[in-house]
Length: 203
Ligand code: SF4
Image (cartoon, rainbow, N blue to C red; front, side, top):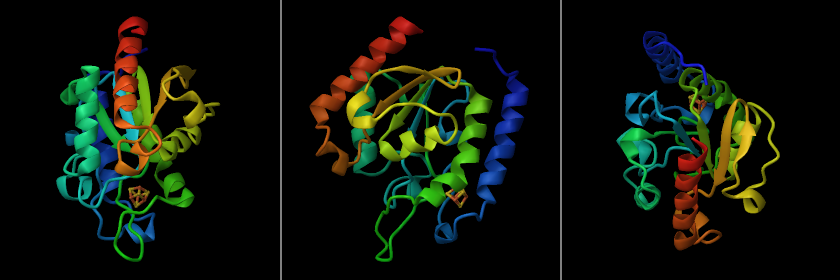
């Protein structure tokens, strides 16, 4: 993969962060934190994890994707199971802001919101050029499909790497409690160990 010069990458990322921080495309995200910045991870990371959306008790408070709530704690344990250092991977979401329902609870982002935020995700990938893109859950898998087509279906293809958009794409389940019903924690631990083996053997 061709490397982007360090300064060019830093400048492009700073512009992207500015644009995201100023974004007002999604009406129900008014007042929410825009979770994209240096705390997401190093731009030189080889692995880019994409989850669904910042959580109300997690990233909307901490400013760091998948930290501060139950999903974040599970994600940390899964990274550890695979031998990944959190400081060596970049973590973001299909949408940069926390969607909430009328009752103030976490909500799934709408298709419109995912489409609104898609260009920012595409810019992030173009800036980083990660070797591996790892989606966490169906929303993230759909978000990357909007950038370039892929034939992956989460339940069928979990953990199976495919060539995609100049890099490797792997679909995993989201670490949120509701996803653990479909993919229990011990199985997800195995998914991260499998991912680590893939990265080690395929580069
Ligand atoms: S989710 Fe993305 S597109 Fe929507 S307001 Fe937030 S930054 Fe903008």
